[in-house]
Length: 198
View (cartoon, rainbow, N blue to C red):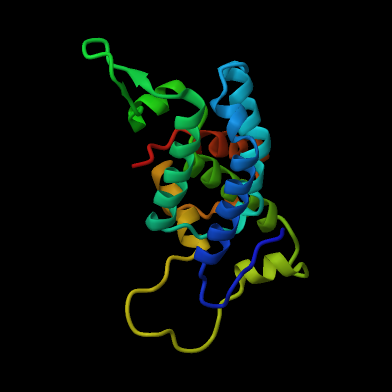
């Protein structure tokens, strides 16, 4: 999927490169996003079709930590502030930047983190339905041998998926068994969009 995977499970480099691509797309349409000629809906469509696709490509394989989630939210807020522009104070008449809560109210679509969670769950079951002969399924299911280094274990891709299921009150259930019923799993994937993201 065009994603660089490392044996130490570092996704910082991958997310950094995707954000670099997103920044390049953002700077190519920056003048249009700040212009008053296109409507807000047109700007949001440009944002979704040009910028988001560059950042989200291959995000199904990311094992995102809180630090990476914050970096993604900062990028998203910066682009949305450019689209919606500043807000004028009624009393003083001064202009100020929109707060994150105001951006969430104006931009009704799910945030970066929610979209990544739902795509990861959709892809997880797709891989789970593959046979053991397929490489992606072997990488996901295989138990690795050897000693792990000292300290807290690094958050794995599977750990993220289990945390999402726990928030959906599916704790203790095997997500591969849950995914066999396509309609129920699709409903669960859509409900991930409503998970509260801190």
